[in-house]
Image (cartoon, rainbow, N blue to C red):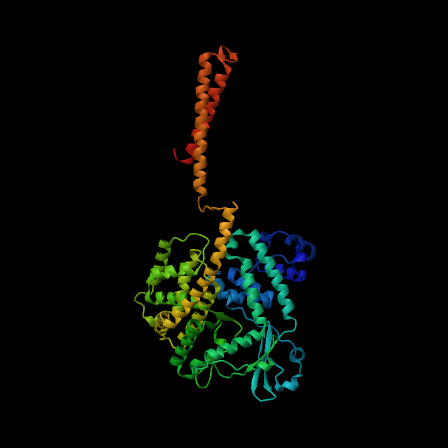
Length: 556
């Protein structure tokens, strides 16, 4: 299919091609092949690949490409920075530097967007509205305001009017590039480029819907409604839509400035780490990007979480598996760690479990004798996941997002209080989770679910048995067998049978030729039967070929 029929904006394809070439990735265009060269020659004036500074690494140039390509691609880089299962550490570090900042749009456009979305003029909703934004990102920008009805200070996040169409166009191009990569660069198929774009597609569409973010905040507030140490902003639902989000204005101290205040840094660090553990292992709903810019410390030392666009979810089965993994890591149980990782991930090849356990053990040995407070639990888990990746054990994205959140909040905690002991902080919660598995109420609940599923299955048994008996009566029952991993055996049997057949033919030729020569029958040449000579020559040639085949197989 032609690119002109595949994407909505050919000009955008031309821009992407030019940026790739400009940053030294012209070989990618060559590998993709297909219609790109034709497209470039016909409609694009692409500058020649320029000489890049020698000190720039491939990861740095890749980050520069994403920055130059604009908001959608910068967002893609940010999502990929949470996927250590897909990218090496140097690319992760670079993509974390991607900033989601773009020039602000005019106040008139913001006012029109709010009026069109909420059906009221700005002055009907707000007593005061700052024309200058406090933040401007790719999808929207944020303004301070005061509600007219209550006088409360709020922040208003407003979506850029044309951002949806631009993102849809860029997604079309990303899907095209992913398909071209899978078709033309076989070595990247294992990473499923199309699958990565599909995951990004879902993530960015969730972020485009501010109503989802509003629900995320409400759920987070509910989960911490009894916690005196954690806070989330209030949501003014009557003013929230897909394009506009109005929440409480939070004023506090940034994490980067907190150390200079000499406040209760130890307790704040411990509260923050416990909060992320609770989100993951108790609530099953966690903040996916708790970096310092999304955390404020209120005057009463409560930690306020901001920006709920990227949230992770953990179901009961995942919580159990993650708890088992962390308990095994805490106890330095190498066989259990290897077993859990092999079960968590999925792989396209058989894993050498003995070698895998050895490499996991090498990671754990680095921490023997190291004081617990000097161990980064998130980094240790990340190192173990890196080993799993080397064995093509691909961990689901939900797990990697969890590890990233844990690593981020742990790093912040260590900055505030270097003696923070993540393992001791995690141990009580892990112990509670393990004990809760034997809670009679939970066992009864799971048993009832199992019994219900069994009863549903048994209800269909009479019908299924009747169908089978009816097919037997009518002679229509067919039983199909599928052999797995027997191809090599079949090939060996075929080769052996072919050799036996050839041997029989050779023996028959020799015996037949001997009889012909003995009785001097058939056409004669120099008093020798021609058929007998042809038979011996044929037998000799076939015997030589058979011997050569056996020698080549190495099984003489």
